[in-house]
Image (tube, rainbow, N blue to C red; front, side, top):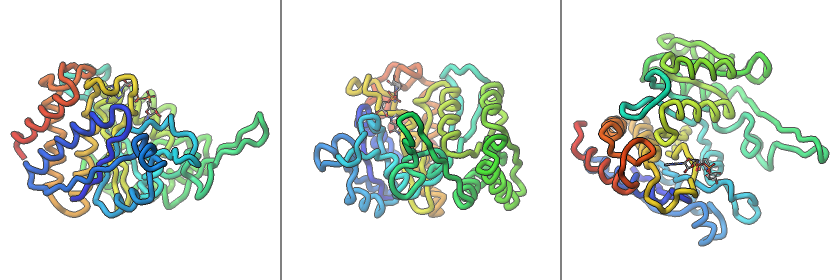
Length: 355
Ligand code: NAD
């Protein structure tokens, strides 16, 4: 498997270095023969090539089997005409990475305020209320007068159906329960279509239980009893917000992996940002990026029918659980190691793990 590695901004280079160490260990332990191709995006690419991402980089990523994208200083990138393109949006759009898979679970050794849980938010990634990606050219936000803005939300049957299918397929490999989250009481046409398409796809998965929740009520349900959820499928903006809530409920945003996947490509990405406040200090938590790398291996393994990749992904999750419980982690989740030491300890533990 060929993976393009883009470390990103802020804490990206540190957390990606730890992740690369873990990928090498996974490759060695499970015979994956991983080929990692290092390149740059974000500020470093802006300095070197005049743009945060380039057409040549896109071609390199298209030719690879997967991409690991470090956190980007997206807030700094304001003017696309000066090459300041949001790399995360760029790859999601160009590679049609329509499903954002964000697992959240509690971990022994990390304090959490709710009962133990293990769920996955499956968020539509290509349309909805995202003004920078739901039309072919330009942005779907208009300044009508100096005091009036109209923002368009796009919902299409095809995108609803494909995100629903991603959720049901995932549920089939888990506890066989899908919860649809929507606001169809207000967005009757758009979210009405979303529910309709989800329910249609559900008919192909009679072994999977389905229920649905209005998004505002869902905030209460997921805080009160997150353990009742398995796979949650929702539209773009609701999924963005809900998945940060579930990650935080798990004890730390730093323990949430994130995979953006499409029909042919996938991108592992940390759930958090570039954290400039702690960059360069060797204290950033690399788990989110490491777990995302595990998700990328799992995606590749399932897609190509190669069990070794799925086994490596499982081992990465189990190693993360054991490492966190043993305190082999950064201080934000109760350990006392630096970023580099956390990556090294993780790789060592993974090499010793049972498949
Ligand atoms: P952030 O997620 O970078 O940081 C929020 C807080 O969490 C900070 O206190 C930070 O120190 C802490 N934190 C984040 N990741 C951590 C880690 N791995 N270990 C320990 N602590 C961690 O959010 P922000 O400060 O609002 O944004 C900083 C930059 O990141 C902005 O330019 C923003 O646009 C960008 N951003 C990028 C992505 C992405 O690339 N997917 C996502 C969110 C934010």
